[in-house]
Length: 291
Ligand code: AMP
Ligand code: MN
Ligand code: MN
Ligand code: MN
Image (cartoon, rainbow, N blue to C red):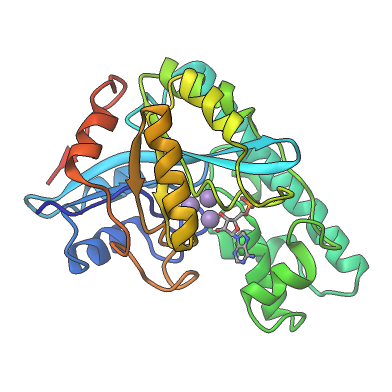
């Protein structure tokens, strides 16, 4: 049986393994198909594509940052044309805003006596100051690692809880797309998408994406819902499988692996081959890459 994992991160965003190493771990985990879905960038796809063993398939993708009613909603997107001008411009804007927001968060942390610097955050992120818009995606996990290094938190989780989680003293919101517009944009660029970890929309009052929003996203061309995600409990998985069935979209399952940040877990959740085929059938912006 083909084993398919449709959500993973490399060091091009907030994962800890290089794109080449992510592929190596995916092969070791017994996967046949992996989507590399770094936050708001396809910057790791080229390197990953160079390291595919025969018979292994890479699905080019990204996890797109969206926001709705004060909470963050994520869209895992696949097989779009990364050079579509509107999409490419939005991605540059998101990445650039992520960098300035990191600077604001560093300033807040320093006001609270936490000895972090933007240079250190950029080094952890593998990014350079003058490359903001085209470089690696800078995210809170990089800040969290700098906070731990500065001795102001025990570990990454503690850094989120104390400082940079939603509502924390050094948290700053960032630019993100409206989720319905994001679905339309990905579809316009020839891609397809699935609503990522819908029960874990950070910052939401309930922690869940409102079903009425999922309905509107489905009407705009959403192809799947990531009901099978390691952060979902049994009841949440069941609930969102039901929503997917009601909306006539496929259920996707994925690990959302971030290397050692999450603990290596590629393949801990998978997508059924029929669901994958149905999800990607309308895609015209790019093709899966086989080794
Ligand atoms: P950002 O996109 O910069 O706002 O950072 C969000 C990322 O931080 C998510 O994609 C997760 O990888 C990570 N994250 C969010 N909340 C937590 C948390 N409580 N503990 C650890 N990592 C988290
Ligand atoms: Mn992440
Ligand atoms: Mn996410
Ligand atoms: Mn993710």
